[in-house]
Every structure is written in structure tokens, then in C-alpha cells.
Amino acid sequence: MTVSGSRTPNIGSKENPVDLLVVGGGINGVGVARDAAGRGLSVILCEKDDLSEGTSSRSGKYIHGGLRYLEYYEFRLVREALIEREVVLNVAPHLSKPLRLLLVHSPEQRPRWLIRLGLFLYDHLGGRKRIPGSKGVDLKVEWGNTLLRSTFDKGFAYWDVWIDDARLVVLNALDAARRGAEILTRTALSAAERNGDLWRATLRETQSGAERTVHARAIFNGAGPWVEKVITSIDGANSKSSVRLVKGSHLVMRKWWDGENGFVLQAPDKRLIFVNPYFDDLALVGTTDVPFKGRPEDVRIDRGEIDYLLDILNSYFIRQHGSSDVLHAYSGVRPLFDDDDGKSASAVTRDYTFEMDVGRKGAGRQAPLLSAFGGKLTTYRKLAEHALERLAPFFPKMGPAWTDSASLPGGNIPDGDMNAWLASLQGSFPELPPELLRHYGRCYGTAIFDLLSGVQSLADLGTHFGGLFYEIEARWLTDNEWARTTEDMLVRRTKHGLFLSEAEKASVEAWMTRRRGAA
Image (tube, rainbow, N blue to C red; front, side):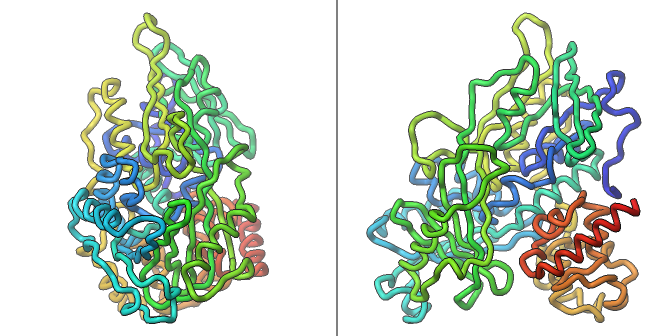
């Protein structure tokens, strides 16, 4: 791995323990690893699968305040989330962009005055700078009679932020590595025990079974749906908290409207269903909230969820859709903090909490175990700040918070003006198609100049696998972004898998097999 951090020799030994062992390579784990490394702590992160393989790559692709959470009086959470919209636009303009949403008014679900009040709070709680405010919309004027059913004539326009969730995870891991963290994918924490004021942890590579012993001053458990499982693997650890697993599923379909705005539909159960542009000609529809039992890695969408989403679409739009219109679907398990009050799945808080375990009373100063319960993609950066505040007493020389203004890798776009910067790329690479440069720019930002170093023509990109996927990008992903399988490349690091045929995917797999054999 080209970018793996400036690993200190023998780091993690008893004589040279690592400051922080982070368990979990989802958004919360990599966020904590990045923040901690930037504050001067030595960090090792282990993830039993690929980065963002679980919940963090299966979201609704939003950094949003959570308009619906206002109904549950979660004002602090909404304010924190609204502020994060502006932060992510500044630090990762290549991954994010403001998205206009049309909330179609359905008087059977919520009165107009309640929505207006909610949007007023939404506009003012977070201190908007770059994001426009909300306003009422006459849907007939905007769309005529060709898109929405005639019963829907009023709505509200407001804005949130679109994000590439899986790449947000990878870029946090990249920045952590560049600041000295060691990122170990497909490496599980199999056991840990306290040894005086240190943790003695056993890490196991999930494919080879090879084991490594790591000594750490503290452990952060950011394993998401597996947070309780990690606690049970740690000798002497126990927890009074738990997570409530909720399945959220999305559909990918052909886009059937013009323009770049999305839609928010009020479901009969009071949920808000989002219908958003996805790439140039696709739509992303979701999400469901279904209680989930079983192994999180086994989550799959079921027929009832597909029908639920299609029924809501068909109740609002003139064009009717069936299951044959679903091109792709994905599901994720959300590890929501379980406050055990009998709420429905959609009403369970999206806030997060921590639990600190410092060992037996009277045993002297013990190595801390900090576990995170709950949370969501939007608030990962604040969760990381708060986690390090909890760990600060154990690291008195740790630096201050810093991530609110530091660009993620590739995010140093001049003035944050992504459109102007993308337009300028054609002058640097005149022989490459605009759509290809836009893809590279959106994925890698200013790192495009490293990716395309020495490239003068399409022939310099190597094998063309199909669509916009060329060998030069495949090499970049395996050399720099911990991609070790075809799925890592086509599903998480990029979304090329949506546009390649089965034969083209097979050619990528053959290339990966040859590359592994040559390693």
C-alpha cells in the first residue's frame, strides 16, 4: 500500500505501545483515527472487512440536518447536523454538493403550518452560509401536469447536501494514514485484555489467519452494528448500553424527471421518502426503517420493502413503476442507540452516546475502552471530536480539535468552486473526454494530477474495462486506497459496477487475479 502511514518501527510493542487502537473501519472509526492522528496520537485502525463495507456505504448519500427529527424535539442533534453540512462542503467539495429538495405537501400526513415551522427552524438552527433557505413552491407552476398527480399542487423547497458516503470513509482513512496512522483492513480484533495500564490486543487477518499482538494505551470501539460483539471479545469488559438494529433499504432506478432537484414524499406512516438524482440518468429512492434481527453482514432487501417504496412512488407520480423498473437495490443496518422506550424503528434517536470502561474500581489507573453507540453519517466528525474529548484525560499532551477546516485529500479546490475547477481540467488534459475528467475530479479532487501523471492520451490509461473504468484507476485504487477485491473497486471506491456488464466485471476480476498473482 503506497499510502499506509509513517509507521514507527515496532509500534504496538509493549516497549513502544500505540496510543489508540481503533476498532472499525466505518465512518466513525476512520473519523476518530484521522482526528486522533492529527492531534499527535499514534493510531492503529483495524477493520475486519473492507473500509465502509457495512453501514457506511449503504446510506442515503446525505449530509443532512434531519428535518423529521424536529418532530421528536432533537434540536441539539439537528443543529449539530446542520452545521456539518457547511463543514463538508468546505473540506470535501469534490465529494459533496448542495441538493435542492421539493417536499411534496400531503395534508393527510402533516399540516402546512407544521412543515413551515419545521423549515423555519431548519433554516435558522445551523447558521447557513452557502446553503439557500427554504420557500413555498407551486408545484403546478414548476412541473405543470406531467409529473405529479393532480392532487398535489403545493410543496416546499429546501436544501441539504449530497455526499459520496463510501469515498468519504476512504478519504478520512487516507488522511489518517498520511498523518501517521496504520490502517489494517480485513484484520479483526479477536481478543483484548488489560495488562497493567495497557491493552494487549490480538489482531487476526481474516484471510490468512495470521495474528499480531498490539499493545495500546486506549481502545476506541467504533464497530457500528458489531459494537456489542467487540465488547464481548474484550476480557473483563461489559456494557449497560446496546444498539437497536434497523434495516434501511434503497432502490436504484432510471430517472424519470428533468433537472437536478430531488423529491421528499410523505409516507402514510409519517416517514419521509427521498427520491434523488443519482449520477446523470439514475434515481435513488429510499429509505425503509425495518427492525432487523440476525447478522448485520447478511442484510438484504425484501419484497415487502420494494413494494413499500414503489407504492409510495406510485401514489405521488403520474408515471407508475413496478419491480421490473428496479435496476439495483441495497440495504444497510443502522446501529441506533437503544433507549428501550418502545419507540417505533423510525422514531428511535439518530443521536449517539458513549460508554467508557476503565476497569475495576480500586485497581489503579486502567487503560480506557471507549465505545460509541448510535450516530449517523452526518455527525461522524463531531462524534470523533467528542470521543477524543472523553479520552483527553488519558492523553494530556494531545493537540486541540482541528478537523472543522482541514480539507480532506483532494478537497483543496480553489475557492471551493467545483464547477469552475472541473471546467479548467480540460485544458490540462485536452485528449481525455469531459465525462471521464468529471468522474476523476469528483472522486479524487486535486489528486487527479497524481492519478494522471504523465498521461497524454486515452492510450496512456491502459486497459479499458468498460464505461469510464480504465486500468490506471484500478492501479490507483489497489496501490493507494486499500482495494483488494473487485467489489472494493466497483461498489465502494467507485460506482462503476452500476454501469458495467457482467462480462466487463469478469474482466476486472481477471485483472485483479493476475495482479494478486504478480504481487
